[in-house]
Image 1 (cartoon, rainbow, N blue to C red):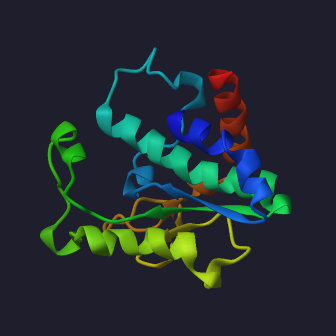
Image 2 (image 1 turned 120 degrees about the vertical axis):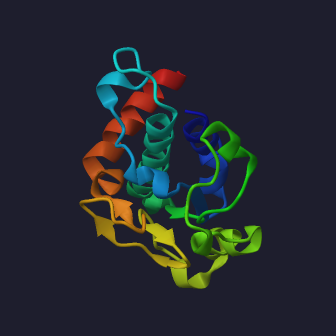
Length: 172
């Protein structure tokens, strides 16, 4: 909910800028779980850190879809991205960086897609999409062995609208 609040809070400033981009950092974690709307807080399911992470990364992608749908008329667009496997402090909570060594990136390599989405004129007026390795990622219906792409549920407009409604209710 924090990322949602940090996005909707400055809406008026984004609109006043006459064009703005919101970059949502997701990850291949979106392939681990859709947002489970009927049990967001694991009140019924046993808590699983990987599934919670997956839900949060699916939510990041959905945020980009709905920001673009709601705000593109004001010149505000949003895209989501997977920066790749970068060793950070987060892995101490998930059992370590488990991706194959050949998939690991430096922080600079991981930042490249974020910078592209934030600054490239190639993406003027482009939103609601998901990128990895500085290119638009394919939408997948099954988790691929190389963990590439974005799950179909993580870019579904109906899920994006529903999440926006739920998040709005939770932060007000």
